[in-house]
Each structure stands twice: as C-alpha cells, then as structure tokens.
Length: 173
Image 1 (cartoon, rainbow, N blue to C red):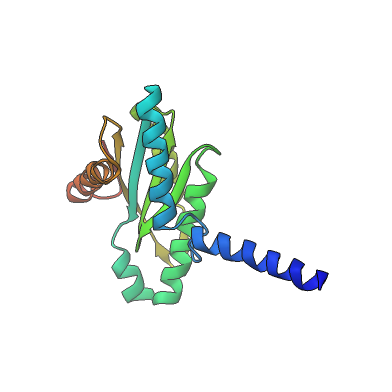
Image 2: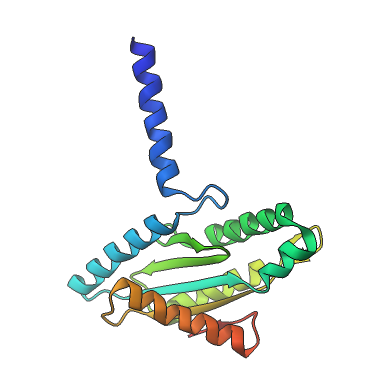
C-alpha cells in the first residue's frame, strides 16, 4: 500500500506541474502567467514598486510553419522559449500568452532596466537557426501605471504591434 501512495503522490505532483507549465515551451501557461502578473500588480500597487512587462512574439511565425512545417515550427517555439528563459533573471516570470506570443513580467524593474534584458533577448533570438528557419522577434515594453492586469497587458501588446508595424525585429516602448 505504501508504494501505491508514493506513486499517487508522485502523479499528483506531475499533474500540478502540467497544470502550470506549457508542455511545448516549458514556460508558464497562459493561466499561470496571468495569475503571477496579478500577484505582482498587487505587490507593486501596495509597495509602490516598479513593475514592467514585455509582450513578445516571433516575426512572421506563420511563414515558419508554412515553409518548414509544424514540427520545425514547434522546435522554433521551444528554442525561442529557451532563449527567453536563459536571458531573464531568476526573479523574472515568463510564460506563453498564446500561439507564438509570450509575456515576461519584470518585478522591481523600471522600463529602462527591462530594455537591457529585452535587447539581450532580441540579440539571442536572432541566433536561432533550425533547419534554415531563421527568426526575429518583435516586443513591446510597458511600465506599470496602476492598470489592472488586462489593461496592463493590452498596453504592452499595443507597444508590440507598434514594433511590428514599424519594421519588426525590434522593441517598442
């Protein structure tokens, strides 16, 4: 009976992780990244702390899938997520917002400080080359100014689309 209990506990732990983590990218899934963003908004609101977020996505990702297939597209998404994870601080929070769009939460971070990390990620993403599928990214940064989570994300998303409409392969803030 003891072995069955241990297996059940182990399976429950796996299920907890699967409920929070996006299988393909290894980053938080949409629900978890939004929960963590709300917690950081609450903390920043009560402590007058700086908080910045970045919305980012892969430029012309549809072309990657169309030209190279979905298997390569999945590998590109996983490599993209890995570059994000390798270039943020331990205190930063990254998750898949949907499709090829990601959200990074930078607690205790000003817009100027987040720009440094964003530029580093931009440079690293340009190095991704999977089966000749070279990619770039666009990103939008926004510093917290009292918004709720949805409006905060919408403002960063607006900056993302400013970058996409300007030239892609850049960061807007």
